[in-house]
Amino acid sequence: MEELLAGILNLHWTNLVMFAIGGILIYLAIAKDYEPMLLLPIGFGAILANIPLSSVIGHEGVLSILYNAGITTELFPVLIFVAVGAMIDFGPLLQNPFMLFFGAAAQFGIFATMLLAILFGFDLKEAASIGIIGAADGPTSIFVATKFAQKLLAPISVAAYSYMSLVPIIQPPVIRMLTTKKERMIRMEAQRAVEVPKLVRILFPIMITVIAGIIAPISVALVGLLMFGNLIRECGVLERLSKATQNELANLVTLLLGITIGSTMVAEDFLNINTLMIMGMGLLAFVFDTAGGVLFAKFLNLFLKKKVNPMVGAAGISAFPMSARVIQRMAQKEDPTNFVLMQAISANVAGQLGSIVAGGLLLAIVPALLK
Image (cartoon, rainbow, N blue to C red; front, side, top):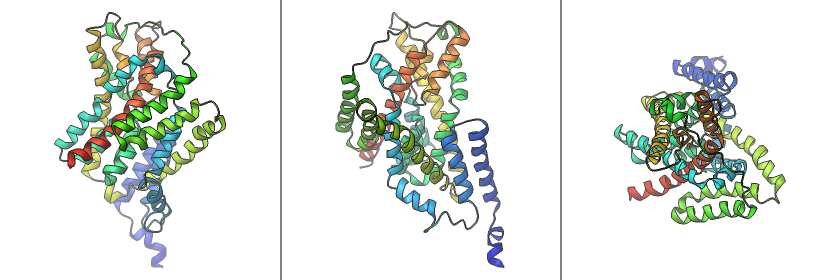
């Protein structure tokens, strides 16, 4: 009889809180369409892990086995990079390389948040793992956290994907606060539709891998496999593999990644002050990213004859294509005839590359500082 009642007898109020948190994530995924592919499995994984005496976690638990096989070994995040690389079209960026600067400037939130985390008492590796939330790139956040702070993986992952989905809510007020109506109405010259040669598209992922790998060898798992996925896309002879990578591989690994991360959200590890601090600093990271991109564009305008719409700088984060769409909507709200979508997309693609490079730099710099 006691075995039948074991679940009820071991039920604690913290389990109920985690059920509620899991339910909120599922609600946001279904009702609000916020990153449903990740938030729904994460939410359900949290519920599974917090059922008293749950058989999905522990030494023989299936989700713990998946965690050890796919997260601890970094296999799942790396496979996601291959899939993401196959989805990215670097064409807009290659047409407008100037936008690379915005992809770099919008990573300011990573390093600002990292310093803030250190001030709050986190060690350097934990601070780097928290700061990388500002990459606005879930797989990068997971990869760095797996390397530096596995105990913080759950709140970092939840913060990264939650705030990515909230970009349309987070960015507009920050942009409006830092720009004038006149600045938001700045028109940018329409880009000419220049076809990027196939050879350039093929050489780009190879060269980026070699250059980034030489500068920071530890980043090869990040940059290299992202670019491998892009090479599959651009080579033109692996169409079936490209489609399979973008669809079947991405869907399967995302599903396993989400529910496995959710299984780490055990009440005793998740319900603490560190989680609240990480969620708060994660939000600040996105705010700092947006501000960094906007302020960098305003700084450039001091020297440019042809002014840049400062809102385009905010699209330099990695949340693609949400951020570019947000910028276009804001531009058309001020002037229905103003189209900055192509420039915003270019900056957004640059942000995807910038977030990966920033993650690689942290992986290289932090261990060196600790020696």
